[in-house]
Amino acid sequence: MLRYFTAGESHGEALVAFISGVPAGLKIEQSFLDRELWRRQQGYGRGGRMKIERDAAHILSGVRHGFTIGSPISIQLENKDWKNWQESLPVGEGDPARHKRVGSPRPGHADLAGALKYNFPEARYVLERASARESAARVAAGAIAKAFLRELGIEVVSHVIAVGSAAMQKDVGWEQIYALYNQDEILLNCADGETQERMKGEVDKVLRTGDSLGGVFEVVAHGAPPGLGTYAQWDERLDARLAAAVMSLQAVKAVEIGSGIAAAAAAGSVVHDEIGYGEKGDFTKFTRTRNNAGGIEGGVSNGEEIRVRGYLKPISTLRRPLQSVDFSTRQPMSAAYERSDVCVVPAAGVAAEAMVALTLAGCALEKFGGDSMVETLRNFEGYRQQLESY
Image 1: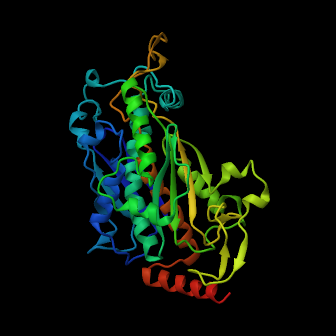
Image 2 (image 1 turned 180 degrees about the vertical axis):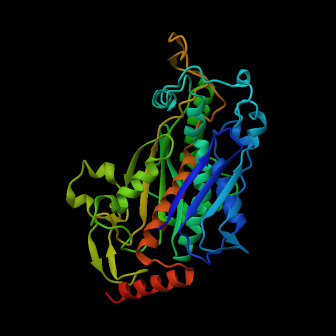
Image 3 (image 1 turned 90 degrees about the horizontal axis):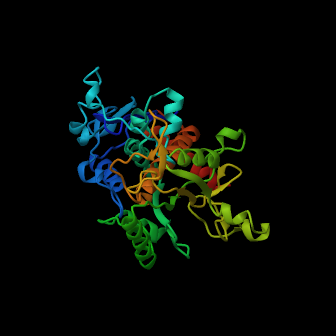
């Protein structure tokens, strides 16, 4: 059973990712983990924090001589900004006068709801954990899941569909999307150059006005076999698990599988993917004319590309703050402002890749099992042969 969680605060000493259930014998390359973390830090519209942090994965346990050993894996990510916050956020009592309070909650952030829930007099501790800085630890854990999925021939990447009102008007294939993965410079991670320029214009506009911008990203899992997930129980359905995983990311307010939103307004004859039987594919001879289902039917992967879209609201920290209320006096005042991004859609896509990879890796291990990669791959090959002979 694959399990994972994270720990750490935005301005604390470090973030830590924990992942257990990974079979022994999986090759882990430091350069791969660090590149995944680098990808999360890129993008047109990122803020000053990304000029400070240079995330690198420091593996503490579970990997020896470059291979997993079957025990829980822990990964530490140093917060370089910690040197500026040690006196403000000490583990011990410290000097209360050096505490940097967040005196007015930001609309759209967890500030007020979190302060009410935990009975905090202000929102500093809420901000520290609710911050999207936490997603860096998820990307580290997701890199381990990606390495596992690659052994099964599954690749997980993302691209940006829309930023503000600038949106792609055409579908793009796997080759175009995968080509983005290897680029040396990530602007808005859009597969269409003309659309990307319009996206940059949208970001420039809100930079001038002190605002922020959201958008839509799509995560694509290529090479996933049919049979991941199940219709047998509601909480084991693959689409439900993916939706929860992507929705759990900071600022994501909606999740779509395949053409789910457009499908709600279309006739069934237009929506459903007709089935044929012909040339042999990766797993079966069954074919599809299209992929409106996003690779999932009835909670089970059907062998087509799995496509999951996340709809990201604008960042809630604005350089031109919205109206709020002072925690102490209850009087009107502007919302708190701390160094922040303007647009994080490409970075959110990378974090969503991690969540999709962790979900698919968990489903794959449930289906194929194995305490070692030799055993898992043997079971996987047996299932592949079963599908080919169906």
